Length: 408
Image 1 (tube, rainbow, N blue to C red):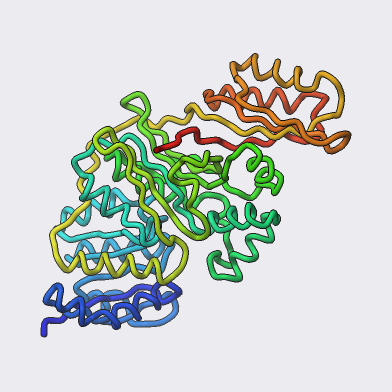
Image 2 (cartoon, rainbow, N blue to C red):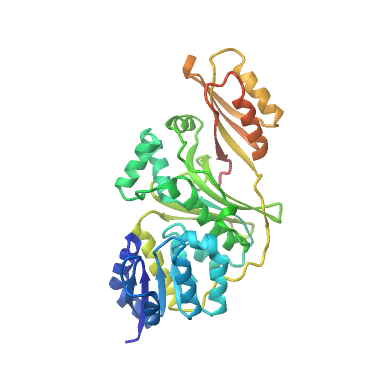
């Protein structure tokens, strides 16, 4: 029997699930690859052998400790000493990916990271292998299962954000500190990775604009239902005017025909658009230790059957921040004549045209809810600033993007 030695960094939720899976499936993997994977050791931040000792007796390192330090140094050491590496660390790849991929190419080893994005949805492998010959126009998706569960619960029950978050934590979909999830930073790191692969352009986390879901109110979802819209936290990377690339994360309303509109609960989904393929959508569980561990194990098996690598970034698309979008606009206004006319006048000054509008409530409950046609974000932001200064406003205006596409 030939043994393939796997060193494990981290033994938390994902790491412990991975260790169990590796032991359970070792026989099947041996029948497939001719090698039997076995743990050569486990190193955590508080216990285990030294990293050099673990590295010495390992053919492959699985990095699941998270964060940047010491993860970056451990991964670099492993690659530079000729070991394959599998990681689910989206923060590491979104901030130091180019350095790590270069080290893997230089030392002719594999750096695999399917578990870093979208749980068990195999979007990394599809971009790197299945669609390697396609020119990608856009990648967008739901890449954070925690926020998707929260928004699904708010829409289903009418509860507040805090209550939906508490339920997500109770069920294990949200961490005790959910900051990276609910602010959109986790999704932004994943979109930086997807953009890098899809467009062969270096994209750092700092170049990804992101917004979270903390300010979403139950009445946003209530009014959205009247407009036949559903709310998701969407990550997007899109080619702009041939030589530009816009990457962002934000809450967005979708019409029922959109392929992401029906993805609910802790599920993830990614849609890839290209002239060669039209669009392909993949979905599956995105939040949870066993799901990520399964993706990590798949990467380990792939690394046992070389070769594979992440090619160098050949493109240098300029990063675009001002793009066109439709918006949902929620205004708490004074209950008096001429309110809609004042708002419409301000919108017209910034070339913002209204697609639909709903007037709700009376007196201190008066509201205007509208959807506007696509407009440059800078023009819409200017209109929002002007509206916020109108004496008819009882609270700051709220806006959420709307994605217009519907696919048959």
